[in-house]
Image 1 (cartoon, rainbow, N blue to C red):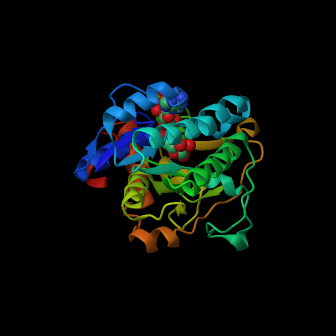
Image 2 (cartoon, rainbow, N blue to C red; image 1 turned 60 degrees about the horizontal axis):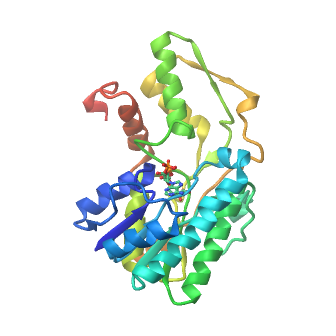
Length: 302
Ligand code: A2R
């Protein structure tokens, strides 16, 4: 398959490119970043590439940043998706488009409704989540007009190469820095939250399977089906990086409108594609530590 990625240089894009190469797909994404809000540049790039599949990953992806600049998030995420779909329609109308949304669209879900399936009502609680719900609406409109558009709703994903503005690499970075400096503690945010955490390498495998086997117009959760307390993740990272370090809670790091717990139901994805996660969380955390501090975990423990 000829694959075109938006957001190719981001965290997920780099893992997806690796997975596509390993799967024998041809990556026809231009090497330089194509601005998804530049309609002409997008059309030119797509006309040259003639993709079979477009993985639309480009977005402003940070919930925290969206609280500071909601209009920029709407412009990139919503208008950007509209422009990508229009450009694909003009340049490669037969291409399948995987539009990446987010489990953030569900908002705070009661425990009794977890694991959460795609039928659950959406109730976004921040500008990023609202933008992704709007992205889905735009995608559905395109699908109704006959475009092959499939929506993925990934729950939280982590792995090597993620920005240290996200919780797992942030904690890892702080533990590594504290160890180097000989500090006895690090400051942390709300570790009571529980999250459905997947390895990014499992998530990109899901996207490719959806491109092959998903049904246009449909929405698929991508989730591990388990939730884990961030406190347990932090404890495991501490064991790997700096045992004995203590955690000091800083109330200013608690995100407003935080969501207490998430757990997704990926049955629909599994039934459509056979997808199952391959990475357990311990392996993912070891790989995150190894990425940020190569050699810090002996090979026999990785
Ligand atoms: O802005 P940059 O240079 O950091 O590039 C980011 C890119 N991006 C854009 N690309 C083209 N035109 C734009 N107007 C534009 N705005 C942002 O999207 C970056 O390379 C990529 C997003 O990468 P990350 O922030 O690392 O997000 P991640 O984790 O790879 O997420 C992929 C997708 C997103 O739709 C998330 O909302 C969703 O998965 O969770």
